[in-house]
Image (cartoon, rainbow over all chains, first blue to last red; front, side, top):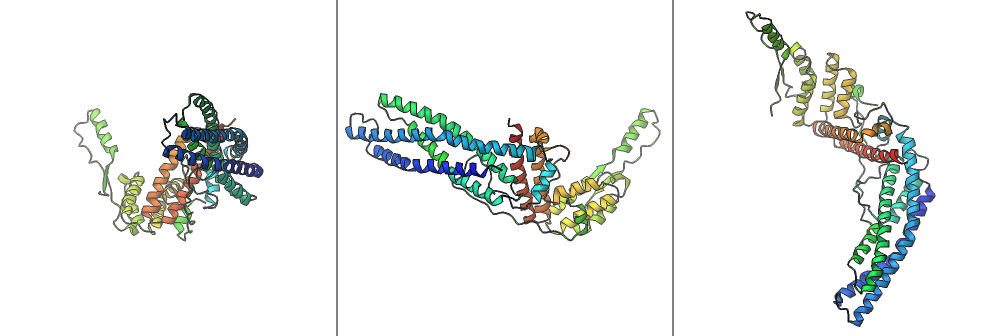
Length: 231
Length: 184
């Protein structure tokens, strides 16, 4: 299992980033609404519109700077979790068990270790909550054998998170360059809101939905069934 | 859909063709033996019906067809007791030498048990996952067979939920391990 400390740090790092950006994102939403409701788009000679636009650009610049500053550390922590779990999955399952052994291991732990969500490719919930949840799950599962699906789930999520972070890093740098150019040309880029949307997606995700775990099947008294069933 | 199927035993027909080829045209061709499989409407007598139906030489090799026809019939009469009826049918087939013990277990567990028989035990997971698509395809097919057996025929919703849970967990762990096996 991943080092608990790495999971805790990842959750805490993501939480700090979310907290530092939440205010900025709210400011941007408000400023953008004012910009739109004041019909500032295209009103290049209006001094109040220029003020709103300048404030919007400043907030956006701060948002990009914070993301660019924080993402490398976040990436390092998530990568550490991914690498740790990759080794665990490869040595403890991949090289040590046959698929049939794996089946036995999963069959003997009915409903106990599933993280109970379908993998859809879209992350659910805040990044910090996701890693906090993993931290708590791994803390609880320490010393038990119920960690196989948990390890797989965290590993796949870490890979997804790394892809998101890597894309976000590239996009933030591009967005900052674009902002500098657009300042020079005096236009408010529509790309700005898309970048904000991407930041929200990376940090705040979607709402989680957890299905109920099924009850284990009752054993049978039928002699023919007992003779045929797999142990 | 009719659950009766007539299966022509081709061996006598081939014998006739061979005889024609040697010029024995005067020998009358033997009547081709037919195998008629008709699982009983009352599934309680499934094993007895199999013993009778599969005892004759014409139907001897057709246990799998009988099993399939019986499943089709049982789909329209879901009942918890069907699980035991099919277990008895398989035991009957084993006693008649129509299926080996191993084949019988594979057949029963594929349709009526929550664990998956498609997963091989010879090589480790990393080696087996070189044919990941084939393995996951086999698991998916078996999940469909379990839906048919556990849920539709044996009317066991809880049992099928457990089979689904195991399928989901297996696919999750196999997908993750497949990637981890390839990590540098």
